[in-house]
Length: 238
Image 1: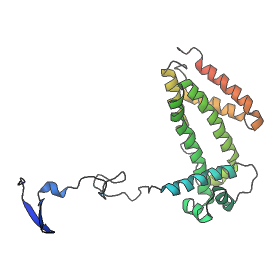
Image 2 (image 1 turned 60 degrees about the horizontal axis):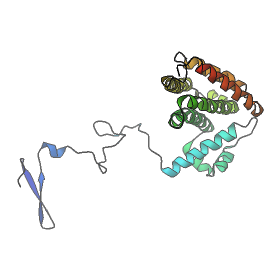
Image 3 (image 1 turned 180 degrees about the vertical axis):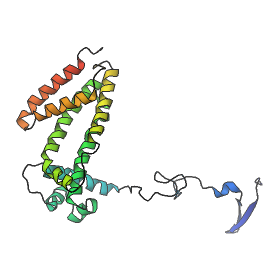
Image 4 (image 1 turned 90 degrees about the horizontal axis):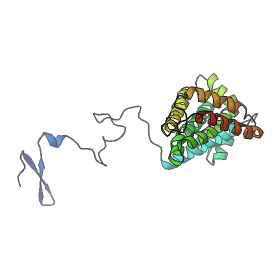
């Protein structure tokens, strides 16, 4: 069968392959083996210089272990933390630590931001498992744990700030957005009042967290969270 446009003939193993030579033949299509197609390419096909390079699975695991080990190490009050000890706790070599985090400050900041990300990301998981008001109450417990970790890392985070970085940048915005998602879902279900402001809830949670400064005070903090949740449910249509 003849195509509508001109063609050229290529001899390969005694067979003639008729290849189209019209304008459409010069426009590559995206496929699994097309080098200029993918999530980091621009419309013109070029890869941006600042595109993040995805980590291999083993590198991601090492990074997560390092971040968890850093939180454990830097949240212990008065502890003299060495990066060798963090690497050992994570089960990796010191060279692996430095490949991911070139400085002590970079490790501390990444560890704190990872805790914030886990807290905010957990809201969707909770909403997928529990009724919206129960998900909101469960998230409050996680918030108290997050603030306890943040307080434990206070000295290390001050070191990061002294080095010229701001680990808290956009933290409040992310927390407000997460609370908005939870409260909107609960209000839509008629489980909490619709006039609740997420900023007020965040202030209340921060106050309750101050009462949970010590592990022995956690039971009292849980009771206070129940009272806060009761206030959100008061006069709810459901």
